[in-house]
Length: 161
Image (cartoon, rainbow, N blue to C red):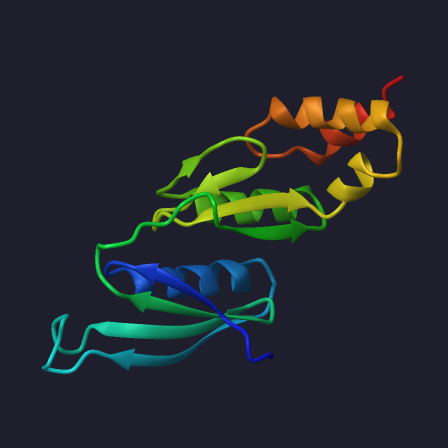
């Protein structure tokens, strides 16, 4: 753990989001756990007992979900990226996080809570890197045609002559 954490602002769904994310990461065999929950008291501004903040960790990274009200919305300008070792990892994270949300393109999705995620193969940087511009271009072209990323198709694009 570090002294740095990511705070995600929600209207009222912070506790449900934290639980969903923890369950998703645990189901995928990654370390994740719920932490302390601070609840609003009778002085408000939310009903007493409603979660105000929820601490949680995903893959060793600390987060805090804050139920701060409807003033702010999530934006794709901030996204969480999950590096996946294989296609089953991509499929599992994708299916769990897109449920109730919406797929976008190029491995991006917005979950049911409005948070943007990138579900990418760990090999992606290797496939587009290394100084071979033609190879990188083929991989990028293949990726731009995808919604959920397909490692085998990206590998084939990289190796095409």
